[in-house]
Image: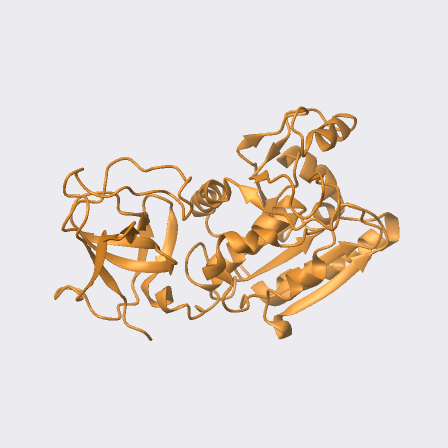
Length: 350
């Protein structure tokens, strides 16, 4: 196990410390307070000149992202491990600013073990993530075939996106108008699809789009906080945008950077352009079992094969149904898919 890397803040003397942001991007939200000159931090991840840290001592936010340099001026320099801290402590640390559980052993990028098997004495607890212009109410309707067969042994935990979708949005407005024909608003999303991701006009419904997002860091922060509040969460079941977000959560889980879960079921997933926003999460294949389901006539997304490439091959399984962009097809085929999902969940959680 690689020893943790420590850094000392040497910049910011004139301004009371250096700026700390919630996410890696320089446009990410600035946290309250600055990381004081002289503070000692432990490295969680280093992406270019951006450092994700945990504070060891000194004033300022407990965790966040800072710039290692400002133009040619160094803001942080490498430092020796503090005498009171073991060089390779495996203790888990709760990061207050983002509610993400970080294992010090994972700073080397090594996978962490899956959780212990779920005891027979309780139901499986499965986090369910809805699609763009969706909601928990919408997803409960879409997941009705699975929920009808699982009341006695699976508890479904529905998480709502924190962003309200507008029919005036140039990317998702058409989808909002379509959903209004079948479901009552409001409609939500977890992160904002970027315009122009591989198409001439950025249409969400173009299956060739490599989907990327704005406010993805906020999304992951809120979702990890929700998972912490609702713990234990044993598996994740995501549809459409919820499936896209699930890849980030599973990558975090495998590296000890978030709530640890056994496995994931992806349904109707986009091409994963979002992984370029957090490349350090995907340097190694995700070491968690994944069941990836696509609709053979889906006109909206076409990311199943590329999503499968993000996982350890032996731990990944792909299935399809004969319908369009929906979790379950009709009648008998839906029941077969329900049994496939249930078998997968119990196989990898128990």
